[in-house]
Image: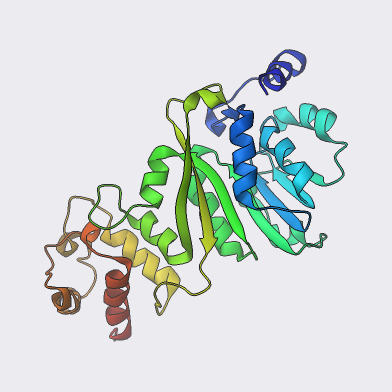
Length: 278
């Protein structure tokens, strides 16, 4: 894989761009592990975000019915079209993934299963996951590589330092688990942090029921807004007396911080105040 990167730089005069978090995976063993965990086959259409040098793309192509890969950097277009354009089950879309209509992009293809497999750019991990959720795609699996610190936040449990509103968002929609760690020397250029590959499976039944999802997540973000502040401070624009009445079920009061509450408890508080709005 290092040969691919060398050719990209020397033959195509490619320059890595920090603004797009370009650290390309070059460890063939890691690529094989990602594909194995993705559980793809000849009935699967795969969405990849960030084609990069095409190392993960190449690893996926032999096992999938179709790969749709998104790449924002037009500087990679000459290389990718020349070196990978002959693959009949690959479509590379040179555009910002966040601006695409995914339903329209996949409409021309027939498939039995769909998966997202990607080495996500660190700086937009959360917007990408949010878009995947909002597009409501019929996904079997999501296997993504993300920054270790982001993984800790995604998978965090109550009463831990990393637990935040993103943890709640993921827990609401997905069953999530860590697969393995990827050391920084598996990339070129090497990033300053290690990465983690995680697997997300869309919940068939949501963990909690809320009256309005968008309003619930806004409430959760407000609850976590200032990490060291209590609910009394963070939720001062909400009916505090009603919130405290619900908290008392678990022996808590308004001096608790959001990190001390589970998704079930936050949902119960939100449902109570939303139902009693004038």
